[in-house]
Image (cartoon, each protein chain N blue to C red):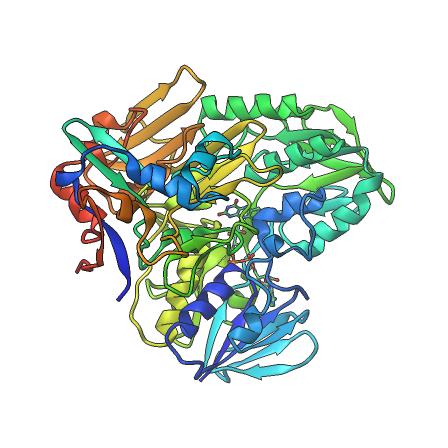
Length: 152
Length: 422
Ligand SMILES: Cc1cc2nc3c(=O)[nH]c(=O)nc-3n(C[C@H](O)[C@H](O)[C@H](O)COP(=O)(O)OP(=O)(O)OC[C@H]3O[C@@H](n4cnc5c(N)ncnc54)[C@H](O)[C@@H]3O)c2cc1C
């Protein structure tokens, strides 16, 4: 069964390490110092921490079964990869934001730094890793990899 | 079973993907289109016109290369369907060919509305809904210095922007007093107008084109106000209507907004399904059946049609208009009914940085929203409209810059985030 990143707001310590790990993982060098000192443009974090003290939690793409972003994409860039996760084909994405318009979680970001075409940016479940970077770095299991218990 | 699909665009692709997701390639699928092209992205046509994207680029296609082969599709491209015999279960093509089907999906989309006026048949009068037409426009473009765009809706404004930036002196003529009437309010439309003018466009509202002037080729237009504008091309972009003659002639039930289907996207004939720009859709925000010609709805309906052909009993319960657009420096997303009747509650705010948000609430349900600038959370509101979420306790937070799941009650938030609440 496909696993997603589960979010536990009760144990989030508001450290933002998930966002940092995400940026590093999706960078050219994958080296924290190089990324934050030299890489331009620096990747956009694909998870975002929401806070309203004492509440805090990190949220990223839920990889919906019935993903509205895939269906609304104007040219097939938003698609499901071999693992079953919803990912963007960066080569073809034109940044029309149709995916943002329908994402029921509000977790797709705009990257407007490319020369010609904008780019939708979202969690891709770290295709180069077994455990996503944000989950691995989370110090308190506020993000864990787990099975989806589907709604009825 | 032989499934025949008339059309090669959003609905067709969605139906194919739905069918192939469950049928182990057991059914034979034939896709028929009057246009001879690989499935392409209609929203990219304005970019294609001015050379920002070429026909052979992957991003112009609606699906990646190999889509037809991977899905084992039989394709007949460049031959129009001309008649459906629903009793014999056959489709006749323009070439004279006849195809027998077990199930048919009629997905012939929309056709441009062309007002009956003098001069519409002159050379250099273009419509803007398919690649065949836009190719003609593109071929003529290097020799066009001045163009009149008729209609200030979503396509007309985009076209005006692209043409102006390209260097064509462009006049946009809109009958109503403001632009993008269906998707924006006065404030939003005003911003769009400014952006178009910044790009060099000339915007004329509250007037209409009465006739197109010229002998063989366009040389100008005459407006209802009496004013004349000289130009060497006219682009008609006042909207689309359902391309449903073929359905009507087959004896399928049709309404004003298009072909009538049930929630399974089945037409009045049990073997014929439909969806997309050709059908009448139930609008969840205005509670009316009407034409809502947008891509996300076309996809959703095509998918439902495909699944129900394989007896999955999936319903399409309704949709609502939604659009995402960028004109000049303005990005906006609008959804639902944004110009409400008097009894609706309106929450709106203009932010210091120029952003704007507006929410329309009726009976504790969100029925429309406009986002200008800060659009990234727009989809959450789309979900609230679709699910008729009771916004009584959350609406006070709608205008917050950091709106998010944190403002929902704990249970709703956690059920949603863990995907246990639709
Ligand atoms: C310029 C432009 C910009 C747009 N931008 C947006 C946007 O930003 N967002 C959005 O949501 N929507 C947008 N749309 C609308 C969107 O493209 C349509 O809603 C969607 O493509 C509808 O899909 P469809 O399959 O119903 O029909 P269509 O896409 O219209 O396709 C109809 C198909 O039927 C074929 N056909 C027609 N007649 C016959 C026949 N007799 N026999 C065989 N085949 C036939 C056509 O060749 C075509 O393949 C835009 C449309 C245009 C034209």
